[in-house]
Amino acid sequence: MPRQPRDHATSSSTLPWGNNQPGKNTPDYAPNGQHDDLRADIQRRRVGLVELRRRFHQRPELSFEEHETAAAIAEHLRRLGLDVRTGLGGTGVVGVLRGTKQAAEKQNKGHVVLVRADIDALPIQEANDAPYRSQTPGVMHACGHDGHIAIALTLADLLADRRDQFHGAVKFAFQPAEERIGGADRMIADGALDDPNVDAVIGLHLWTSVPVGTLSVQAGPVFASADEVFLRVHGRGGHGAMPHLAVDPIVVAAQIVVALQTLVSREISPFHPAVVTFGSIHGGEAFNVIADTVELRGTLRAYEASDRELLRQRIGEVARDVAKGMRAEAEYEIRRGCAACVNDAEMAALTRRAAEATVGADGVPGGDQRQAASDDMASFLAARPGCYFFVGASNPARGIDAPHHSARFDIDEDALPIGLETLARATLEYLG
Image (cartoon, rainbow, N blue to C red; front, top):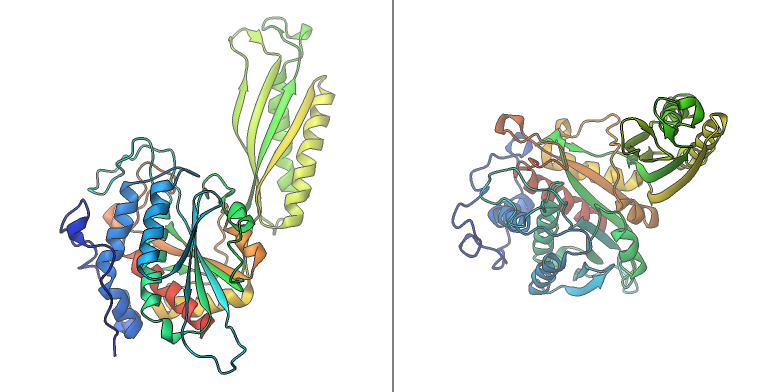
Protein backbone atom coordinates (compact mmCIF):
# COMPACT_ATOMS: atom_id res chain seq x y z
CA MET A 1 0.00 0.00 0.00
CA PRO A 2 1.25 3.53 -0.72
CA ARG A 3 2.62 5.25 2.33
CA GLN A 4 1.03 8.40 3.64
CA PRO A 5 3.57 11.23 3.46
CA ARG A 6 4.31 13.47 6.41
CA ASP A 7 3.54 17.17 6.34
CA HIS A 8 6.12 18.56 3.96
CA ALA A 9 8.39 21.53 4.57
CA THR A 10 6.99 23.65 1.75
CA SER A 11 3.51 24.59 0.67
CA SER A 12 2.16 27.05 -1.89
CA SER A 13 0.69 29.20 0.89
CA THR A 14 4.10 29.96 2.40
CA LEU A 15 6.03 30.77 -0.76
CA PRO A 16 6.07 34.02 -2.75
CA TRP A 17 4.30 32.69 -5.84
CA GLY A 18 1.14 31.83 -3.93
CA ASN A 19 -1.18 29.07 -5.12
CA ASN A 20 0.13 28.54 -8.64
CA GLN A 21 0.52 24.82 -7.87
CA PRO A 22 3.50 24.36 -10.20
CA GLY A 23 3.87 20.91 -11.67
CA LYS A 24 0.37 19.76 -10.77
CA ASN A 25 -0.81 19.18 -14.32
CA THR A 26 2.44 18.09 -15.96
CA PRO A 27 2.29 14.92 -18.11
CA ASP A 28 3.01 11.42 -16.92
CA TYR A 29 6.59 10.40 -17.72
CA ALA A 30 6.11 6.70 -16.91
CA PRO A 31 7.01 4.25 -19.68
CA ASN A 32 3.77 2.72 -20.95
CA GLY A 33 1.93 4.50 -18.12
CA GLN A 34 3.33 2.12 -15.50
CA HIS A 35 3.03 3.13 -11.84
CA ASP A 36 4.17 1.74 -8.56
CA ASP A 37 4.37 2.64 -4.88
CA LEU A 38 7.49 4.78 -5.30
CA ARG A 39 6.06 6.66 -8.27
CA ALA A 40 2.90 7.42 -6.32
CA ASP A 41 4.93 8.84 -3.42
CA ILE A 42 6.84 11.07 -5.81
CA GLN A 43 3.68 12.29 -7.52
CA ARG A 44 2.29 13.38 -4.15
CA ARG A 45 5.46 15.41 -3.56
CA ARG A 46 5.58 16.91 -7.04
CA VAL A 47 4.16 20.34 -6.18
CA GLY A 48 6.43 20.72 -3.16
CA LEU A 49 9.43 19.61 -5.24
CA VAL A 50 8.87 22.34 -7.81
CA GLU A 51 8.17 24.93 -5.12
CA LEU A 52 11.46 24.09 -3.42
CA ARG A 53 13.32 24.57 -6.67
CA ARG A 54 11.66 27.94 -7.25
CA ARG A 55 12.33 29.13 -3.72
CA PHE A 56 16.04 28.44 -4.07
CA HIS A 57 16.03 29.94 -7.56
CA GLN A 58 14.73 33.21 -6.16
CA ARG A 59 17.43 33.39 -3.48
CA PRO A 60 20.73 32.49 -5.19
CA GLU A 61 24.10 32.89 -3.48
CA LEU A 62 27.63 32.84 -4.86
CA SER A 63 30.34 30.28 -4.11
CA PHE A 64 31.32 30.04 -0.43
CA GLU A 65 28.63 32.65 0.35
CA GLU A 66 25.70 30.21 0.48
CA HIS A 67 24.80 31.02 4.10
CA GLU A 68 21.03 31.44 3.69
CA THR A 69 20.89 28.46 1.35
CA ALA A 70 22.80 26.25 3.79
CA ALA A 71 20.63 27.34 6.71
CA ALA A 72 17.44 26.48 4.81
CA ILE A 73 18.84 23.08 3.82
CA ALA A 74 19.92 22.26 7.38
CA GLU A 75 16.53 23.28 8.79
CA HIS A 76 14.74 21.09 6.25
CA LEU A 77 16.91 18.06 7.05
CA ARG A 78 16.50 18.50 10.81
CA ARG A 79 12.71 18.58 10.41
CA LEU A 80 13.00 15.21 8.69
CA GLY A 81 14.90 13.81 11.67
CA LEU A 82 18.33 13.50 10.03
CA ASP A 83 21.63 13.94 11.86
CA VAL A 84 22.93 17.23 10.48
CA ARG A 85 26.40 18.79 10.34
CA THR A 86 27.00 22.27 8.97
CA GLY A 87 30.05 24.30 8.01
CA LEU A 88 31.83 21.55 6.10
CA GLY A 89 34.05 23.12 3.47
CA GLY A 90 32.85 26.53 4.67
CA THR A 91 29.12 26.45 3.90
CA GLY A 92 28.49 22.79 3.15
CA VAL A 93 25.80 20.72 4.87
CA VAL A 94 25.70 16.98 5.50
CA GLY A 95 22.66 15.04 6.68
CA VAL A 96 22.64 11.34 7.59
CA LEU A 97 19.53 9.18 7.28
CA ARG A 98 19.89 5.74 8.83
CA GLY A 99 17.77 2.82 7.71
CA THR A 100 15.96 0.69 10.27
CA LYS A 101 15.66 -2.56 8.34
CA GLN A 102 17.34 -5.39 10.20
CA ALA A 103 20.34 -7.08 8.58
CA ALA A 104 20.56 -10.84 8.23
CA GLU A 105 23.76 -10.84 10.29
CA LYS A 106 23.88 -8.80 13.47
CA GLN A 107 27.44 -7.63 12.85
CA ASN A 108 26.52 -6.22 9.43
CA LYS A 109 26.31 -2.45 9.80
CA GLY A 110 25.18 -1.94 6.21
CA HIS A 111 26.48 0.15 3.37
CA VAL A 112 26.52 3.94 3.21
CA VAL A 113 25.80 5.80 -0.01
CA LEU A 114 26.42 9.53 -0.39
CA VAL A 115 24.06 11.64 -2.50
CA ARG A 116 25.74 14.87 -3.55
CA ALA A 117 24.06 18.13 -4.63
CA ASP A 118 25.84 21.41 -5.41
CA ILE A 119 24.29 24.61 -4.06
CA ASP A 120 26.04 27.73 -5.42
CA ALA A 121 24.93 30.19 -8.11
CA LEU A 122 26.68 32.34 -10.72
CA PRO A 123 27.42 36.09 -11.04
CA ILE A 124 24.84 36.58 -13.81
CA GLN A 125 21.93 39.01 -14.05
CA GLU A 126 18.89 36.91 -14.93
CA ALA A 127 17.12 37.93 -18.15
CA ASN A 128 14.05 35.69 -17.70
CA ASP A 129 10.71 37.17 -16.71
CA ALA A 130 9.38 34.15 -14.84
CA PRO A 131 7.50 34.76 -11.56
CA TYR A 132 10.26 32.83 -9.74
CA ARG A 133 13.17 34.78 -11.28
CA SER A 134 16.14 35.68 -9.11
CA GLN A 135 15.53 38.39 -6.52
CA THR A 136 19.26 38.94 -5.96
CA PRO A 137 20.73 41.50 -8.39
CA GLY A 138 23.57 40.12 -10.45
CA VAL A 139 23.29 36.56 -9.12
CA MET A 140 21.44 33.68 -10.73
CA HIS A 141 21.05 29.92 -10.59
CA ALA A 142 22.07 29.48 -14.24
CA CYS A 143 23.29 25.89 -14.02
CA GLY A 144 20.47 23.92 -12.38
CA HIS A 145 21.86 23.77 -8.85
CA ASP A 146 18.53 25.00 -7.48
CA GLY A 147 16.95 21.89 -8.98
CA HIS A 148 19.68 19.68 -7.57
CA ILE A 149 18.99 21.02 -4.07
CA ALA A 150 15.25 20.47 -4.43
CA ILE A 151 15.69 16.92 -5.70
CA ALA A 152 18.08 15.95 -2.90
CA LEU A 153 15.89 17.47 -0.18
CA THR A 154 12.79 15.74 -1.55
CA LEU A 155 14.73 12.48 -1.76
CA ALA A 156 15.57 12.85 1.93
CA ASP A 157 11.87 13.30 2.66
CA LEU A 158 10.93 10.33 0.48
CA LEU A 159 13.51 7.99 2.03
CA ALA A 160 12.75 9.15 5.57
CA ASP A 161 9.28 7.69 5.03
CA ARG A 162 10.90 4.48 3.76
CA ARG A 163 13.72 4.02 6.24
CA ASP A 164 12.32 0.63 7.19
CA GLN A 165 13.00 -0.56 3.62
CA PHE A 166 16.78 -0.28 3.73
CA HIS A 167 19.72 -1.24 5.87
CA GLY A 168 22.70 1.10 6.23
CA ALA A 169 22.52 4.84 5.66
CA VAL A 170 22.14 7.59 3.10
CA LYS A 171 24.41 10.58 3.55
CA PHE A 172 23.30 13.78 1.82
CA ALA A 173 26.12 16.20 0.96
CA PHE A 174 25.12 19.71 -0.10
CA GLN A 175 28.32 21.09 -1.55
CA PRO A 176 29.33 24.76 -1.90
CA ALA A 177 31.44 26.35 -4.64
CA GLU A 178 31.14 23.94 -7.54
CA GLU A 179 31.19 26.89 -9.92
CA ARG A 180 34.54 28.06 -8.56
CA ILE A 181 35.83 24.51 -8.07
CA GLY A 182 37.10 23.66 -4.61
CA GLY A 183 34.03 23.04 -2.50
CA ALA A 184 34.21 19.27 -2.90
CA ASP A 185 37.83 19.00 -1.76
CA ARG A 186 37.12 21.19 1.26
CA MET A 187 34.10 19.13 2.27
CA ILE A 188 36.07 15.90 1.95
CA ALA A 189 38.90 17.39 4.02
CA ASP A 190 36.34 18.26 6.69
CA GLY A 191 35.11 14.66 6.90
CA ALA A 192 32.15 14.51 4.50
CA LEU A 193 33.05 10.92 3.60
CA ASP A 194 33.61 9.82 7.21
CA ASP A 195 31.48 8.96 10.26
CA PRO A 196 29.81 7.00 8.85
CA ASN A 197 32.31 5.98 6.23
CA VAL A 198 30.90 6.28 2.71
CA ASP A 199 31.04 3.23 0.40
CA ALA A 200 29.67 4.77 -2.81
CA VAL A 201 28.55 8.13 -4.20
CA ILE A 202 25.87 9.18 -6.64
CA GLY A 203 24.69 12.47 -8.06
CA LEU A 204 22.87 14.03 -10.96
CA HIS A 205 23.07 17.12 -13.14
CA LEU A 206 20.09 18.70 -14.88
CA TRP A 207 21.26 19.26 -18.45
CA THR A 208 19.69 21.43 -21.14
CA SER A 209 21.45 19.86 -24.11
CA VAL A 210 19.40 16.74 -23.36
CA PRO A 211 15.59 16.80 -23.89
CA VAL A 212 13.29 16.34 -20.93
CA GLY A 213 12.31 12.69 -20.57
CA THR A 214 15.79 11.47 -21.51
CA LEU A 215 18.64 10.48 -19.19
CA SER A 216 22.32 10.00 -19.92
CA VAL A 217 24.14 7.31 -17.93
CA GLN A 218 27.51 5.83 -18.87
CA ALA A 219 30.60 4.32 -17.32
CA GLY A 220 33.99 5.96 -17.53
CA PRO A 221 34.66 9.70 -18.02
CA VAL A 222 31.57 11.91 -18.32
CA PHE A 223 33.01 15.37 -17.52
CA ALA A 224 36.47 16.61 -18.47
CA SER A 225 39.21 17.81 -16.19
CA ALA A 226 39.73 21.58 -16.11
CA ASP A 227 42.92 23.53 -15.51
CA GLU A 228 43.50 27.28 -15.91
CA VAL A 229 46.47 28.31 -18.05
CA PHE A 230 48.39 31.59 -17.62
CA LEU A 231 51.02 32.80 -20.10
CA ARG A 232 52.97 36.05 -20.00
CA VAL A 233 54.98 36.97 -23.09
CA HIS A 234 57.75 39.55 -22.59
CA GLY A 235 59.01 41.44 -25.62
CA ARG A 236 60.51 44.89 -26.10
CA GLY A 237 58.23 47.84 -26.64
CA GLY A 238 58.63 50.44 -29.31
CA HIS A 239 57.01 52.53 -32.03
CA GLY A 240 54.39 50.78 -34.13
CA ALA A 241 55.95 52.21 -37.27
CA MET A 242 59.42 50.80 -36.44
CA PRO A 243 58.84 47.14 -35.45
CA HIS A 244 62.42 46.18 -36.38
CA LEU A 245 63.62 48.09 -33.33
CA ALA A 246 61.26 46.22 -30.99
CA VAL A 247 60.20 42.66 -30.15
CA ASP A 248 56.44 42.56 -30.60
CA PRO A 249 54.89 40.32 -27.91
CA ILE A 250 51.48 40.43 -29.61
CA VAL A 251 52.88 38.73 -32.72
CA VAL A 252 54.74 36.25 -30.52
CA ALA A 253 51.57 35.51 -28.55
CA ALA A 254 49.66 34.90 -31.78
CA GLN A 255 52.27 32.37 -32.89
CA ILE A 256 52.10 30.64 -29.49
CA VAL A 257 48.32 30.30 -29.65
CA VAL A 258 48.50 28.76 -33.11
CA ALA A 259 51.35 26.43 -32.15
CA LEU A 260 49.52 25.17 -29.07
CA GLN A 261 46.58 24.00 -31.18
CA THR A 262 48.84 21.35 -32.68
CA LEU A 263 49.29 19.72 -29.28
CA VAL A 264 45.79 18.28 -29.40
CA SER A 265 45.82 17.51 -33.12
CA ARG A 266 49.32 15.98 -33.24
CA GLU A 267 50.35 14.82 -29.75
CA ILE A 268 47.07 13.44 -28.34
CA SER A 269 45.41 10.30 -29.70
CA PRO A 270 42.51 11.10 -32.05
CA PHE A 271 40.44 8.76 -29.87
CA HIS A 272 41.03 10.96 -26.80
CA PRO A 273 39.18 14.30 -26.92
CA ALA A 274 40.98 17.28 -25.38
CA VAL A 275 40.71 21.08 -25.56
CA VAL A 276 43.20 23.95 -25.33
CA THR A 277 41.37 27.28 -25.51
CA PHE A 278 42.54 30.83 -24.80
CA GLY A 279 39.65 33.07 -23.84
CA SER A 280 41.57 36.17 -22.77
CA ILE A 281 44.49 38.04 -24.38
CA HIS A 282 45.59 41.46 -23.12
CA GLY A 283 48.47 43.62 -24.26
CA GLY A 284 49.14 47.23 -25.10
CA GLU A 285 47.24 50.46 -24.57
CA ALA A 286 47.63 52.42 -27.82
CA PHE A 287 47.07 51.53 -31.47
CA ASN A 288 50.51 52.70 -32.60
CA VAL A 289 52.67 51.46 -29.72
CA ILE A 290 54.28 48.03 -29.49
CA ALA A 291 53.69 46.71 -25.98
CA ASP A 292 56.27 45.25 -23.66
CA THR A 293 54.09 42.39 -22.40
CA VAL A 294 51.06 40.32 -23.38
CA GLU A 295 49.10 38.18 -20.94
CA LEU A 296 47.02 35.17 -21.99
CA ARG A 297 44.55 33.10 -19.97
CA GLY A 298 43.02 29.88 -21.14
CA THR A 299 41.60 26.52 -20.21
CA LEU A 300 42.88 22.97 -20.63
CA ARG A 301 40.37 20.12 -20.74
CA ALA A 302 40.97 16.38 -21.00
CA TYR A 303 39.31 13.09 -20.06
CA GLU A 304 42.41 10.94 -19.60
CA ALA A 305 44.76 11.72 -16.70
CA SER A 306 47.80 10.93 -18.87
CA ASP A 307 46.64 13.39 -21.55
CA ARG A 308 46.09 16.03 -18.91
CA GLU A 309 49.62 15.68 -17.54
CA LEU A 310 51.20 15.63 -21.00
CA LEU A 311 49.41 18.81 -22.04
CA ARG A 312 50.25 20.54 -18.79
CA GLN A 313 53.93 19.92 -19.53
CA ARG A 314 53.92 20.58 -23.26
CA ILE A 315 52.01 23.87 -23.16
CA GLY A 316 54.83 25.44 -21.18
CA GLU A 317 57.57 23.89 -23.30
CA VAL A 318 56.06 24.99 -26.62
CA ALA A 319 55.25 28.49 -25.37
CA ARG A 320 58.77 29.08 -24.09
CA ASP A 321 60.44 27.67 -27.22
CA VAL A 322 58.27 29.64 -29.65
CA ALA A 323 58.92 32.83 -27.70
CA LYS A 324 62.67 32.16 -27.61
CA GLY A 325 62.75 31.61 -31.36
CA MET A 326 61.20 35.06 -31.84
CA ARG A 327 63.58 36.85 -29.42
CA ALA A 328 60.99 37.03 -26.64
CA GLU A 329 60.45 35.24 -23.33
CA ALA A 330 57.40 33.39 -22.03
CA GLU A 331 56.41 32.70 -18.43
CA TYR A 332 54.04 29.80 -17.86
CA GLU A 333 51.77 28.94 -14.95
CA ILE A 334 48.95 26.45 -14.69
CA ARG A 335 46.44 26.37 -11.88
CA ARG A 336 45.20 22.86 -11.32
CA GLY A 337 41.43 22.66 -11.24
CA CYS A 338 39.37 19.51 -10.93
CA ALA A 339 40.03 16.11 -12.42
CA ALA A 340 37.72 14.38 -14.88
CA CYS A 341 34.49 12.89 -13.52
CA VAL A 342 34.93 9.14 -14.00
CA ASN A 343 32.01 6.81 -13.30
CA ASP A 344 32.50 3.36 -11.81
CA ALA A 345 31.21 0.63 -14.14
CA GLU A 346 29.11 -1.18 -11.53
CA MET A 347 27.58 2.03 -10.16
CA ALA A 348 26.82 3.20 -13.70
CA ALA A 349 25.09 -0.10 -14.46
CA LEU A 350 23.02 0.19 -11.29
CA THR A 351 22.04 3.78 -12.17
CA ARG A 352 21.15 2.80 -15.72
CA ARG A 353 18.75 0.18 -14.37
CA ALA A 354 17.15 2.86 -12.21
CA ALA A 355 16.91 5.24 -15.17
CA GLU A 356 15.33 2.63 -17.42
CA ALA A 357 12.80 1.79 -14.71
CA THR A 358 11.91 5.48 -14.60
CA VAL A 359 11.61 6.45 -18.29
CA GLY A 360 12.01 3.19 -20.19
CA ALA A 361 15.01 1.87 -22.12
CA ASP A 362 14.34 4.21 -25.06
CA GLY A 363 14.79 7.18 -22.74
CA VAL A 364 18.32 6.12 -21.78
CA PRO A 365 20.27 6.05 -25.06
CA GLY A 366 23.68 4.46 -25.38
CA GLY A 367 26.79 5.82 -27.04
CA ASP A 368 29.37 8.35 -25.94
CA GLN A 369 27.62 11.29 -24.25
CA ARG A 370 30.59 12.94 -22.53
CA GLN A 371 30.57 16.68 -21.90
CA ALA A 372 33.65 18.93 -22.11
CA ALA A 373 32.42 20.88 -19.10
CA SER A 374 33.93 20.13 -15.70
CA ASP A 375 32.59 19.53 -12.22
CA ASP A 376 34.30 18.89 -8.89
CA MET A 377 31.99 15.97 -8.29
CA ALA A 378 35.20 14.46 -9.66
CA SER A 379 36.72 14.59 -6.18
CA PHE A 380 33.94 12.45 -4.70
CA LEU A 381 34.17 10.00 -7.62
CA ALA A 382 37.94 9.74 -7.18
CA ALA A 383 37.54 8.98 -3.48
CA ARG A 384 34.75 6.40 -3.78
CA PRO A 385 33.14 4.39 -6.60
CA GLY A 386 30.14 6.24 -7.92
CA CYS A 387 28.02 7.54 -10.76
CA TYR A 388 27.21 11.04 -11.99
CA PHE A 389 24.37 11.11 -14.51
CA PHE A 390 22.57 13.70 -16.61
CA VAL A 391 18.84 14.42 -16.53
CA GLY A 392 17.39 16.00 -19.65
CA ALA A 393 15.86 19.40 -18.86
CA SER A 394 15.34 21.18 -22.17
CA ASN A 395 12.08 21.69 -24.03
CA PRO A 396 12.45 23.87 -27.16
CA ALA A 397 8.69 23.78 -27.74
CA ARG A 398 8.30 25.76 -24.50
CA GLY A 399 11.28 28.00 -25.22
CA ILE A 400 13.47 26.21 -22.64
CA ASP A 401 16.70 25.59 -24.50
CA ALA A 402 19.19 28.24 -23.33
CA PRO A 403 22.63 26.82 -22.53
CA HIS A 404 24.07 26.57 -19.06
CA HIS A 405 25.57 29.80 -17.67
CA SER A 406 23.24 31.85 -19.89
CA ALA A 407 21.20 34.77 -18.51
CA ARG A 408 18.13 33.04 -20.01
CA PHE A 409 18.88 29.60 -18.60
CA ASP A 410 15.90 27.68 -17.25
CA ILE A 411 14.80 24.08 -16.91
CA ASP A 412 11.66 22.20 -17.80
CA GLU A 413 10.46 21.35 -14.31
CA ASP A 414 9.06 18.04 -15.56
CA ALA A 415 12.71 16.93 -15.26
CA LEU A 416 12.62 17.22 -11.47
CA PRO A 417 10.47 14.15 -10.64
CA ILE A 418 12.33 12.15 -13.30
CA GLY A 419 15.65 12.92 -11.67
CA LEU A 420 14.21 12.27 -8.23
CA GLU A 421 12.78 8.88 -9.16
CA THR A 422 16.00 7.73 -10.82
CA LEU A 423 18.05 8.81 -7.83
CA ALA A 424 15.62 7.14 -5.43
CA ARG A 425 15.61 3.85 -7.33
CA ALA A 426 19.41 3.78 -7.56
CA THR A 427 19.83 4.57 -3.87
CA LEU A 428 17.32 1.97 -2.73
CA GLU A 429 18.80 -0.72 -4.98
CA TYR A 430 22.31 -0.02 -3.68
CA LEU A 431 21.13 -0.33 -0.08
CA GLY A 432 18.77 -3.20 -0.85
